[in-house]
Image 1 (tube, rainbow, N blue to C red):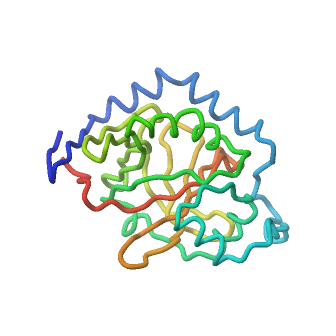
Image 2 (tube, one colour):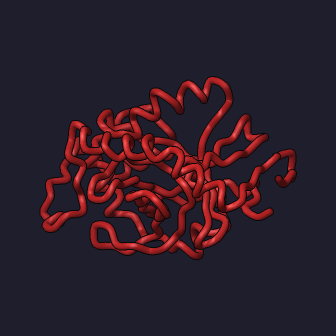
Length: 227
């Protein structure tokens, strides 16, 4: 545990992550299965993806980006998010993710597994002052789910195990990627904005070849990543 700048931040030993994900294997298997039941196929990285129709809603990239940056509570067309993702610069795992903590926000598409989490878990917890994010302590150790209560107490939820950070290619570009040690999942990131020193990443969570949802990460430099 570390107390700094009025924040209490918890750290767990590596064994906790391994034991937690083994104990909760049925839950994580169910989460993977739900990806196959999404209304849309959400397959954006298979052979021939360059020819896919990404017209979406027809909104301009600037409008889509502005809605996300301003945190408008709207449902996005997934093709719009893919089109925006393709237009953004890549980020590097070692220099842009590692040794940083992030605040998360789900981008609704009204058809993803993360949408279910948003309505069933994230919004109810938000009424209690609990929000979520991620923390990357080094290239081989990270928290895929770091909860915080009223921006005062930060505690990892290790149900998905540990993660590592590397650069992996998705839709033709190698970019910073969060790899789950024990799940068939990856989170790919690109730089959405760094205006006025506020760094925001656009992320997509994938189960193997299926995109299970979209989200943003906003850098929070006030949260320590080391004991």
